[in-house]
Amino acid sequence: MQTVGFQSHDHAACVGSGLRAAEETCAAKGLRLTKGRRRVLEILLQEHRAMGAYDILGILSEEGYASQPPVVYRALDFLVLNGFVHKVQKLNAYVACAHPGDTHTPIFLICRGCNTVGETAASLKSTLGAAAKAMGFVVESTVVEAEGLCPDCAPAAETPA
Image (cartoon, rainbow, N blue to C red; front, side, top):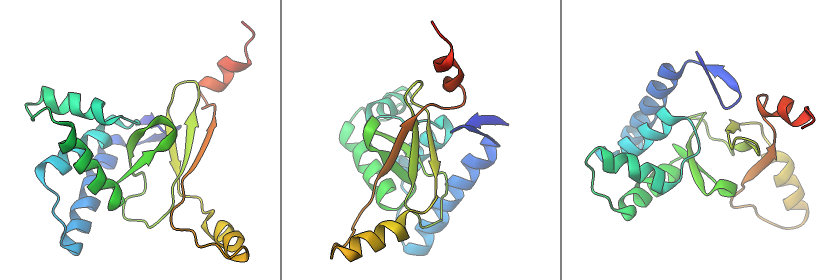
């Protein structure tokens, strides 16, 4: 067990279940999970942190993949579009979905101390949807990111320097 996104968890099971969920979804929807797309997802699942496209490109380059940013961005676009990966706007980075296979709008908890990102699937959709509907607005996409301090950084912030 290790700590990921502020909670302990079985890392090996998480990587396996994330890849299986992507493979099953792609098979069911007739989508192609190419070798490159799969490897980008696998990197994000293994690293368990928000990573920029160029961080991912660096790992791929070390493994002998062509060093071409468009390849990584196309893979990330596919993975985000299909819910396997989320983009964290504040960090301009990507994280593997912590709830693969579940239809949800993620809420990101971003530590301002260490940039650790936790994902929760708590629902704001019905509240937001009701508020928007009352104003005649139709919500097409939602990004919710909360910034604060994780359990490791919060005690350090309370200690006087």
